[in-house]
Length: 468
Image (cartoon, rainbow, N blue to C red; front, top):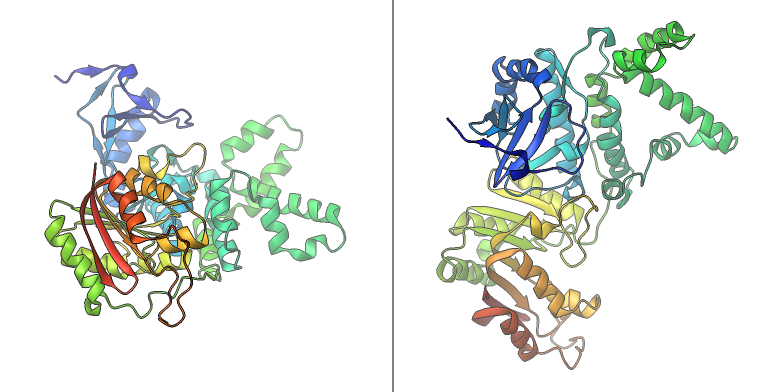
């Protein structure tokens, strides 16, 4: 008989609206205590074929009946612990698009078994390496046949997936990620006015009224039938309200959601570094081959690698294929460069692409910072420190602090002694007096246990160290 764990021994979320389960963390295990009134539903979901199909199709996180016993719960389920947790503001366009389609596919499977998803915001999807999976068990509810073809999750889906994809499609480079970073940053009304520019031709008051009509119709039509009754049941126009709902509700189905996602299937966001690695061939590059050799011979116990400023991730993939590395996290702050990484590695179980500006990271106040979620045996930053130091005034100590925070063992970093040199030896830009190889080596050795340094190319000096 397993020991019963008291609630105070478990960690949980500060805020949750899950009616079905309570989410707990027990060491590195992720479990949910099922509320008594939903035990029958959960048993049906677990044994009726739905969950097996979702997991087999890699749409939902692996889940099973747990052997843990938690005080106050007769049924406990357990999820696979996703090692490198990530958030929507760390995804590229194609990652967001695939996350949206994962939600739609998940909902269609649930429909086969009489269920649907309702709380379908993007934070309920996580990339398990390069595979998006839905993770919120409490989002499944029984389908109410009175709703016709309406999907009660449509409005959440519209705001959380269609809105940022639409902004990508129209070339708004920062808005798409900012709406995940800042709650309320971009609203339903903002999107309506952007999509329907005619609405303000006769003044803002007309635009307000048109938006209210448009938004009201969508919200009423896609709402759960029971919620409409709860809200308007005593209203003297309840029959008219329900008639309006029945008239339009079939317009807001899963099929409609899929169509609007297809309508924004292309990003028109441009970026400076997107083509930087177009002609790179790591297998033919002496510098890349030498770094690969160092990883194989000098860092033999390193199994996971984080590459910062990975651009298209070509070298990161080369290292994965030609060394002992088994897990790769390839990051860049350029959305289009990251999209190259993702498209090359879609569906892989050993690569996680991540949008990440490592010297100026973004996160919400209620999300965990990268260093609390992501760690690798080796952290590698090539051909990037000179840009940060010489053009962005980023201090070397700050760079090393960030690298230290996300490595568990080793550090690989390059120093560019010629600074912003671009290939013309007769026209080398001047560098500050302090900017020397000795200065870099001293700062490096203060922070890390020195292993080696060597010149691997013109203006490329490799430093390798161990975490002190």
